[in-house]
Image 1 (cartoon, helix red, strand yellow):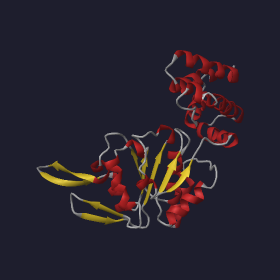
Image 2 (spheres, helix red, strand yellow):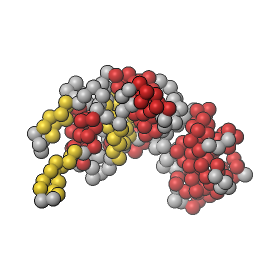
Image 3 (tube, helix red, strand yellow):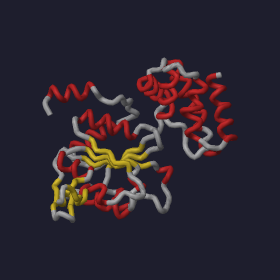
Image 4 (cartoon, helix red, strand yellow):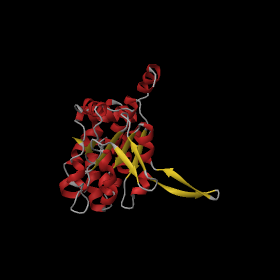
Length: 268
């Protein structure tokens, strides 16, 4: 990538407000060809951070949303039939290796353990991807980077990352931003004024205090941005918070009513 292209890419960076040293750590890991593991709750900015860093580094990004039915073939590729012949189609992981891209596996613990084993030779000093069905062994170029993430709050004995896999990564933990940072994020993403962003952040802090009592998940920064977007476009703040924050957090009417009391206390 030329210097001019890099400058253009940097100007189009997805908005991201750093919380600490995560940008420097990610860049250092990239420069030294180290895979990265990111832990953090839903909606705290993990995916946005990866998009920001891919643009910052000028690398293509392949994102895979992991799930229970994800197979190794979904990552690596498979033979397909078309026009009366059989041909090989690369999966996203293989394409990322070939292109020297960043491959991001979101919520990697949701994938089956026999699937994540294919990451082992890519995430140690070999940096290779064996493709058993074709007999090919790809050597990852220096530009390739493997990044995985998960939410520790969802971990259990059946859905945890194997120690043999975890210990191949450089790890970083994310949490919801500090109030001043979160205000900047909400303003930057939704376009609301500072006073509205401050109220939304105050609301989130109030709702997060209830997490251990009535809610399985906290009010995420993402939901604050959604609410701010509705408000910015003329929606009533209380109803915007109901639609963008309260309804996604709970299906229980009594819990929803309790959350709306907090909303009304902030925006009423």
